[in-house]
Image (cartoon, rainbow, N blue to C red; front, side, top):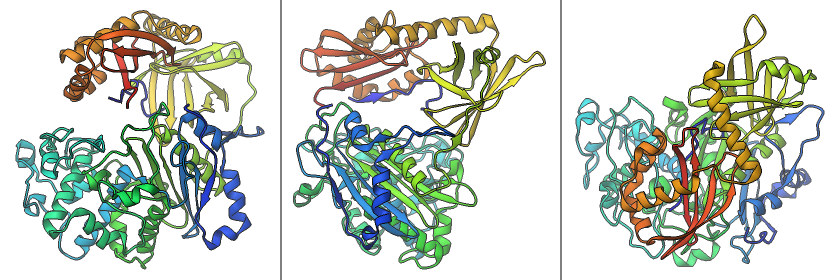
Length: 609
């Protein structure tokens, strides 16, 4: 079991041994260019999320960061001026094993979705499918069950591709290599041996956005019903081979002859995923095996189609694909950037794999693939370093620090009620510290008298003051989103500040918040019995537990009673981590208690995971 609950406040904010260091490259004419080689060298020195004017950026070696995050291997491809300029592997495919090369295979995870969308749109273009027709007209071997929501509005392909179909099941854990794999119908209905819930409509289609891998399983079934071909063959014939993705396949499991060239997946602890790569019969949303170079070829096909020279899509179809609908989502990828320089992107995360594709509609882009559960953090750091190197519009901002009397920070000290929690600002000598509930303290720096920023993440904080010059409200800008909050009166702010003081003291002294061990032990016992006390949980955590209770109980009950619970550490957010020994298993567990003693989050991972 590996479930980590995001903290309540601004969840969007976010070794075995050091891997044998080596690189492997794709031989392309561009790599003979010393400019490309110089860029590759510089990109191996990761930059921070914010650059400060007049300060040399503190760079981190890619090799050191990989070792710190327990990510053995990374593979990168960079598109520049409408071509793959270079592709290179770093680290190893497995600890003690061969180096990653540009041809090492990784699981693309959810980046499978926009590749799948190409096949759908090619069939739409050929007149064999319609984006706005009831998909049950195309489905033969299985139908979306009717309910009150589908009576209001039938599910369409457009809605499935844009995650607006009101469909359940966010994602899939896959199946261990030695476990029985379900049929597509079993996955759709959530019947054994499927390990995910039934895929159903639970809101009126077309009214809300909710990410759904389940919707793409329906797309997979629809394509097989329509063509009579297996999904893997259909994708090979209609998309992969025509656009030159010759290293890629939707075969699940991967044929044994190709396993020799696979990057082995690793857990966040640095342990390999037991049994190797998971199998994903949910091919359309999660089943693509590929390389960054091949994903770059997908991106180049989209760029060419927009320019009128696509191999499988027309300009009008490509334009429709990249037209943002609800929540900035197109027909497959998400759309970002500015109106002048938009890009399309998609991230992916399977067991032991994390990857990211981000490509501008014209010119540049990059793909990063990793074989570690902590690769998400690393791929973001790599992407921003590539963006800085190539001067992309979304490269890290450059800010300056204004010289202010630290006593002026006192006007902003206090707690502010935000839409999803609170933010507390505290003056500590010559520093101003910010802290969201459920987060650690972060120092912020003045850019002007009322505008501050953080170096650790791209966040701008603007204080609004009253006639007396005392802050009354605050606006936090995260990327392109603003979150406003009002300052709480001292009486309301005091218990929050007191709770944060306990958390910060717990972190400094590495002593768990009182009650953490008892709460964790009881949570494990309650989950094992299948009878959790939801009144002791935050609403968000209670929702997560309800949705996963059956799987939690099934796994925990197989471990037997707890024989030992040994404290390990406290994170800067106050979460306490323990090593747990059951009668039949051992592993790590963590718990985060809120200010009122409720459980805001928990984490479990067995040593075998």
